[in-house]
Length: 340
Image (cartoon, rainbow, N blue to C red; front, side):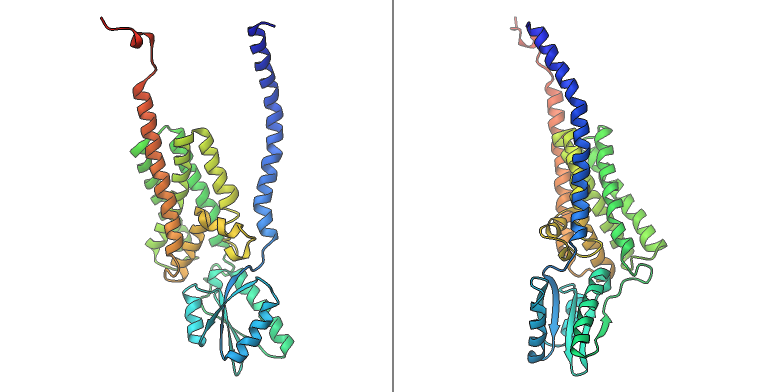
């Protein structure tokens, strides 16, 4: 067989394999998406969930013994009295606290930190109180807003922000914007998204109750973190980077965010991974600035800032590399010819 015939046969085989690869890829992606979204949702349960205990040592010791039967469910923090436990809930150090008093147990919760967590704590300790013949008093220290008592609106904001960021990164890439122009477009677009989202969630729906401009900044930073990451990967890796960035945010960032419950309610290591990615960090940060006066906001704010900074840096580096390659141009026979 001649070289031409062999090349033609290989090309024909590649063309025949493409439909087979496409058919096989669809169910693979579907299975991956189903795993990413369904697995965490099907395994929701407390895992080292920070919980405070306050009261006399003898009484709290008995309570802790009962809690130990739920191995690995709670991470116990001790406080001297109800005031200290209430302060820990308000500072987001714990999701709730049980205070042992002469009148009976008192449960402090914060539905603003996660209505599902607050409901789980109420159910767990109401059952314990009923079994011991006592009555449980529940106090919602930091309540979820009346317009979003289940936290569904806030948790639903994760996906649109991720989509907005992916769209911004894809638009910059497909329009061929590079370097500083791409950075300006990404930053300006994220700022507009942040103000529009704050206008909807805070001013219109009333589900965010903190400082308007701070919330707009968080929403904009969340969008920028995703958009910069997607555009940065595309600038360095080409179309493959665009797909990689979008898949990372959608298939891991969104389902692992813990926005509808809490990171400690997801199976390990999904909850931890989610907080390292922009969707999870943005949900945590938005709760902090909107309901808790910025308590525990440093960690997620730094996470989003690093994603945005590294992504924009990659955009600048990728643009510089492409400009250098274009300036060098292809080497021709004329360039190689001797002078004179």
